Image (cartoon, rainbow, N blue to C red; front, side):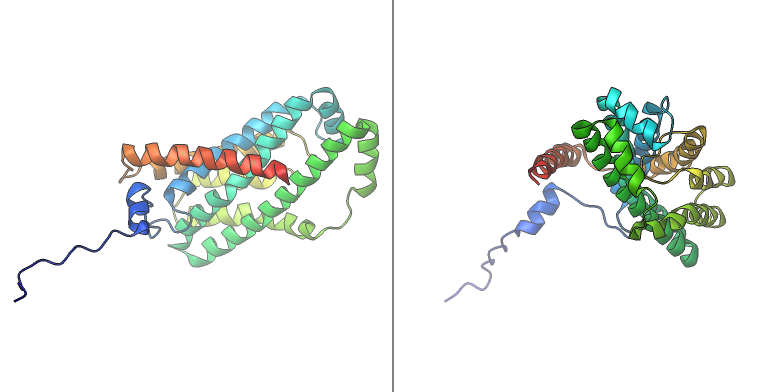
Length: 262
């Protein structure tokens, strides 16, 4: 006879379960997409990278002929400055997304339109970064004079992303008002966030005092919010951190290498 008390074998652990155990991911309900770890990190790093890039190029006149001439004389400095600024702009999308989600949890309209307008405008800055990179390559291959003529010939030409310039400027104001009305940010930090609307937008735009004020306001608004998200309990275990950090660095290095292949 079969022994009815014999225990059945435990089901094998699935690969997904093992991965979740090794590389745990926090649920998104509290902050919404992209979660507090990605969003909090972006809130801290994005504004700081943009401010650093702006400071590095601050000694050169902001208009494009001077920016191209500066690249010809100081290619490493200018490439670093523009690269940091572009990387910071890229990190602003998760920063804005998590901020808009917090606003939207209390006022759907302010969160929706603030987030949509700002993130749409960030695409315009990304487009400009691509044009900046091409212009700098023209400097390397043909010299600053020829690059200046090429940029001047097409400066102001219509492109699809030009329609998003106003969205970015208005979006920071809408997002700041929403953050203040919903108390996601206090009045001082909300006003600082609104100053970001003063950040110049366009191809090969250098740094002005206005730029530094706008980016200082962005840092004052976003960096403390990001730190508050990252420091909030529950915190990941040391084992999870030791797994996630190397994996993230390896993936970034791999993506950088593959990106050079074209």
